Length: 243
Image 1 (cartoon, rainbow, N blue to C red):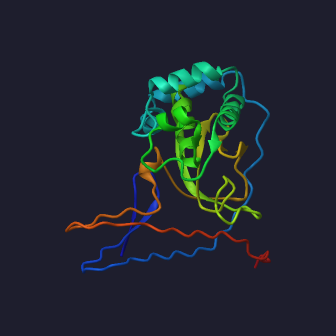
Image 2: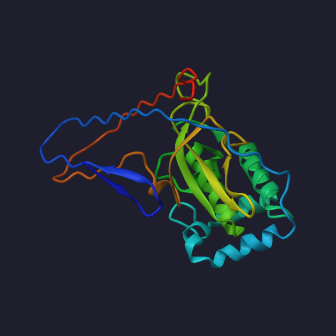
Image 3: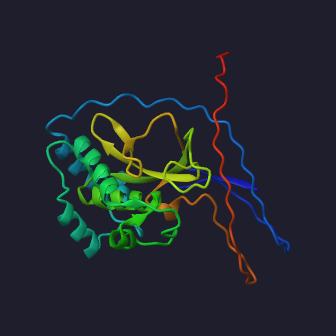
């Protein structure tokens, strides 16, 4: 097994199995220390939108200000934006929070209603989806405003998560977005749960959209059918005294 760093700064592990096999089991156990993010102001300076729009010409941010395979503009997206009336106003921080709330109001979380390959038009048509879909739509709209926005993959600890994983508060793999803002840097929004992120969120990778950061990805040579079973458990350890 080898360890690499991808173009987005994520650590990935590459495993090669050079023999026939019926099952491949990957077990990952991590102990993670988390802390709440710094508090945010009520609003940003009046010139904040001018700074944000200037970033669209920044080559270092280009991949997060332009469409990606899962976040490109579509007629359905244009219609949704027109229908909801959501758009940039005087303050990007407030506007992005309003965008997350708008998605939460208009979409229903339904486990299994979409797949990892679903385009944004699917949730826009049915108004049902999962966290990945909420994130993709928010990314598509925020980037259309010129805001550098990236997809975040990770986990969400919820003390009373439903055992069947049926709701957005489950402890399965979760997805949310990060938007770069003047004075603040990258600010994380979770449109699925209508909130900013806090100490319950554990990030594992960032990218342009889901295709950049799947938890696992595999290639089979020789032809075969495959299936995937996933079991995620996020638990809280007792508070540990500092050394």
